[in-house]
Image (cartoon, rainbow, N blue to C red; front, side, top):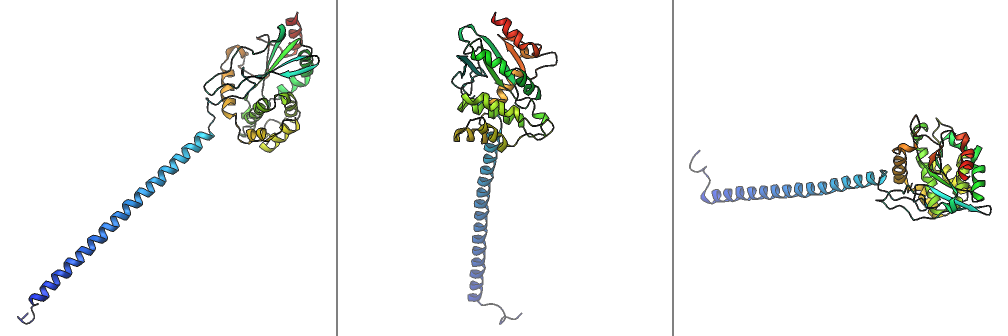
Length: 282
């Protein structure tokens, strides 16, 4: 390289300015890129947190919670009926609060009448047989004022219906009717036993359950929403667990349905239920 080939002083200055400008532009691009990644990362983190929160909320809403409030007219865990002059009347009570528990003490025992309590699962074939054999006789004693009747819905037979939770959904239906249409409870129960699905099947669909409730005379938007939302799902679980934990209700093979009490005493042989009611009345 000769002296003539060397860059002039002005050319060297221009080159230095060009290099400085290129470096400055590169630094600007780097900062913009980092800022974009930072903002994008924060945005993705916010989205991820929102998704996690949504999933948690949905899961919590879908879980049967032991603190769920109970239905009205079932303060003892059962819906109760008294009678006179040939009529049967449901006993109205407030709902058990979310933090409360059902009272073991009956809210009604009119004039010393014999207190009959039935623990039933609407999915239970033996309960269906029991009702067919004895329901009318027991109700006659209620209508005359000789007895009161308390029906305590439970859910213990989900396992027999192909993971469809039929027994639990049926128990929720019982509680919806007790809450919104207690005077139709016995008619709805008859519909469920008359149309009971066979064990080993998937049970009844939600639409079929709603149809039976309507056929029993329990209608209205409140009833429909209670069924579709399974409003008392948590109470079905809580109430059933309390029954299963009560040793006084257990037989030689644990708790089973139907379980019948006469004045608080468990009837060991169901075919003796009318005899025991009559004996208690004396």
